Amino acid sequence: PFGTPNRGPVSPRGSRGLWERAISLHRSSWSYVLEAKPSGRSVTWLGYDSPHGTAYLPFFGAATEAAPEPFHSHEGYMSKYSTKVAWWAFNIVNQHADINFQLINADVRAKSKEIETQGQKLVEACSKKADEATDEVMANEVLTACSNVFAEKKVAEWWEFAGSLFAKFGRYSITFNETAQGELPMVYPVWWVNAPDVGYSMWTPNGPFHGRPVFAAGMPPSSSPGSASLLVSLACASAVGALGYRLGMQRGLQMGKDVGDVYVMA
Image 1 (spheres, one colour):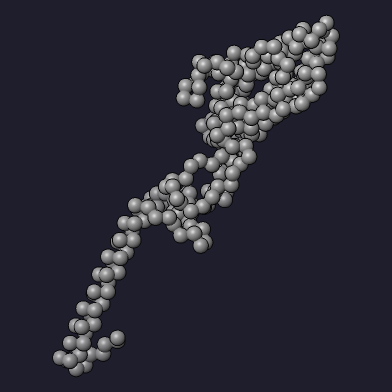
Image 2 (cartoon, rainbow, N blue to C red):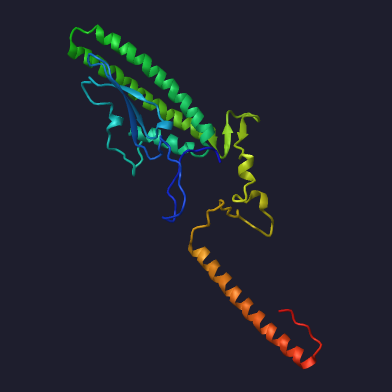
């Protein structure tokens, strides 16, 4: 109910329907924007994890050495968490944002904008410093050191930012400080609370204890073990009803013949 664009797999396979596919897919590992420039000053803006929750960091194409260690460390990977791997800093922020995407991602995008603006200024400053170098090799070394120091610093800053999000957005609350007025609840939207599928507005001590599915017009529910047993039960009930009706009609007709004062409606 909080506006996340992320959509997981649908079970069982073959169910009718379709998710709108976001450009900023939640399964993204990384994305980049290449800024082509002359004289070996091209810049690759690299962002880890989903684009909607990352900060794009600048790396010069003329770099004379690899990116900082967190960008190529094998201390961790997708199946092994590690604070020594830059990707994890951005991934845990995006995962946490799913608690309340509208609120948390707004803070994430503001932080991203702050870092990317700093990155743009850094590129200009690094380029000017490189112009003062005595030769091309030294100029490229200046560019490399300049962007690598910035990238390492900003990854460390993103880790701190991740921790601040855990403190601010947790327990279905927004915590600003330790005062009596320093916390606000994450309130569900009215349309979601009142939806029959949710069950909040329908709950009673005797049930139902969960929501009731509401199927879209023209979209019958897909078959499942539960729906199959329901159909069997309905078929049995129909058969028993039909048999009872026939027996009742036969008994009524016989009574009419025996008593002579009985009216039977066919």
